[in-house]
Image (tube, rainbow, N blue to C red):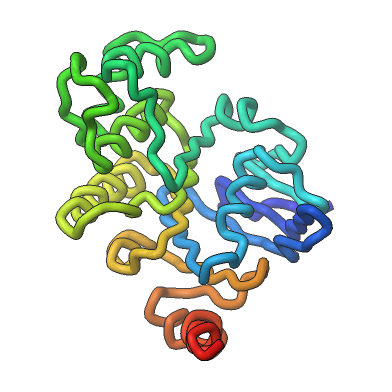
Length: 248
């Protein structure tokens, strides 16, 4: 049986995924330690979000294993993984637009037992640098504050691992700087492991300890951001393919 590395909080081994008769992921293996930020990049269609669907428990792999805290969690559903301390954010920060911020926090606090007290919601909001009146309607929040609201809801449950899918999407440079500071605190001061899929290299350059590059459902390179961007396989995936698509 495949085993998780002794020093890894979270790992997957030889993940294969088929959808609609098409192979989406092929032999994906990775691991992340406590307090580490692992960036995942790749061209559109590389399988990055599909990988998160498997890691979070929304999709079952065709084969392979997922480990958390030394235990095989491959067969656990999304809600079971959430209760273990695995949080997930999505590309689009969808919030309950008709609710106030305070109502969103209450719903998150009472999502499952044990219910949390309001102080824990405030703690999560402070960590996320989310400073908005509880009376504000969620629909009125801009993109950054929507992301911070959702992150606050995750943090109040004190997760050990965050799976973040394009958290910088739709943000301007100054907002990315704010997000950068928040993620640094979560990883380096609270020892939370973070897997982040991202296209904005300026964010990954400052927060990621390692980078994995995916293409056509496989890992084609890994290392520092500088190393992987110099890798001929990565350049082919990003640049040569783009040129071919333009010519076509």
